[in-house]
Length: 118
Image (tube, rainbow, N blue to C red; front, top):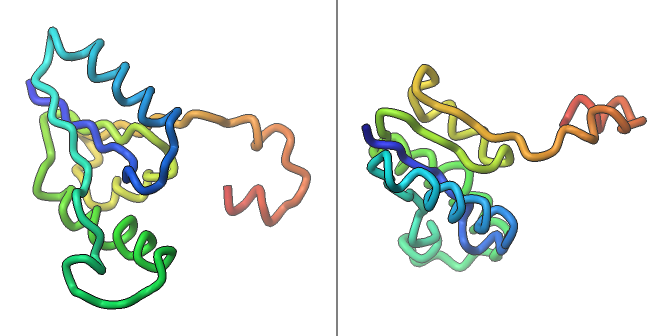
């Protein structure tokens, strides 16, 4: 069985998510074929445009990464961070799991708008 781990972009610089993905891979490695998917380049790098880093990250995260992810699905797809949950729209939802790391804001959020966005 091929399990594909869809990781955060390195440029996000979220060490806790990297640590989680690395530990998950190590734990599953003995039983499954693990494929780590992560884009290796930014959209701007490919298109030779001069956009801000923030816009570049946004385009890569929400347009380019899902486009590439669609082509690298496994028998089971695991999106290792809920902030990349939008990948579900590009992956087979019957074969995809998204880990949600923190639901505490649902309990303590006082702003209706923030709660709806979360």
